Length: 491
Image (cartoon, rainbow, N blue to C red; front, top):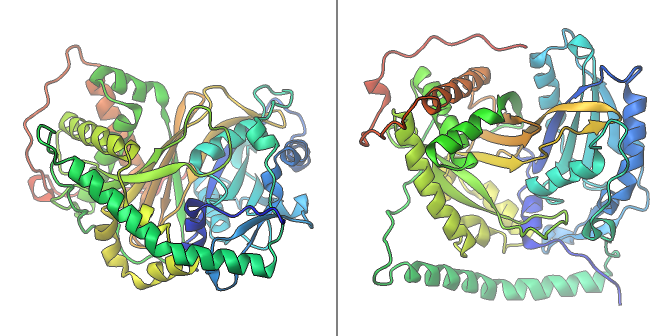
């Protein structure tokens, strides 16, 4: 009997969700300090990757898709795997500053990965000012989630400039692709899965109803119904274009906020983003009365789960952008985030849990048929904010130190902003992926987020904890006139 390895419904969701204007790959822009490595360049970088990449079997897997996308694809070995196809080099145009780097990375991101090949690319970037180097690594989200991608860096990179190869977890080293299915096998599997789909959907609906009814038991605290996502200027139709702006925040400052106010790192990050977005939208006279809401990824991994896969669900949480008082904003976010995370860990269902039951063909059709202006209301979110924990220790690539890692993630129809942060070596490195037509002057948003961190840092440094102010609605009308638009940040 042929051994087959079919994608899970969660992994296949990212295959069906891809369209000409929707990319389902994530990326990371890695800044390198090669000042201690004489003669560092592409050849050094490639030798490092040539030594590390063959150790991970998944790098040689590609998709075998079912005709008409009627069933989940299969993972199979690429018999013609060519490392040179996946590792390439490119130069930043003069003057090689952050704006030029941002524009180059945005262009590289806006290229669909070739499904006839393993779904990853690495671009070595030269020509940066000050003799710096960088690289952009792209992975399709069907291969792994953000936490798994972070673990992958610990396999691909070194913990010392001349470090030894790290030991691989058995789940990684022993992973195997399946064989190419015979036509009768994939036809039979497709028929079985399609016949089970109504039953599976019914089961999910029943689970959701049981979960809702359990919350109505006598004596159980009643939560407020989830607020709807308001209409904002950052929501609407998206094109094929993407942009990336980025910033590195001191992780020690965010930890100080966490400790001072008894919240989580994620709560503090959401409050900082909420404060920055509030000021950005006020400056552009586009702040709605209702708070913006974000899709928040919740990891379902156990501590023993070392494999490269997708083990996440998503939930919706407020960013409290209607709160002028920063401490009231933080308290509101912290309280709601704790509730929705608990619900997610105890079987709460979101829209994606139902969508992933469909074959890729139907997922793709849903994306094309759903009006973009209805998606925020359907999903209950205006944007995506993610927080990924990375290595506390600095890592090295061919002896060069990785100084910062800026994530670039997925934007779906209806939303123009994804903010993904990665904690690494004492920094919280934030990548803002934008739809340029919906988020103009993105460097202004970066400045507002940095200013919001400064505001919370100042509050955390005061002697006694400030008492949260009573809740009151704040709108753009209650604020001074919009600030003048700032110049684009370049370096």
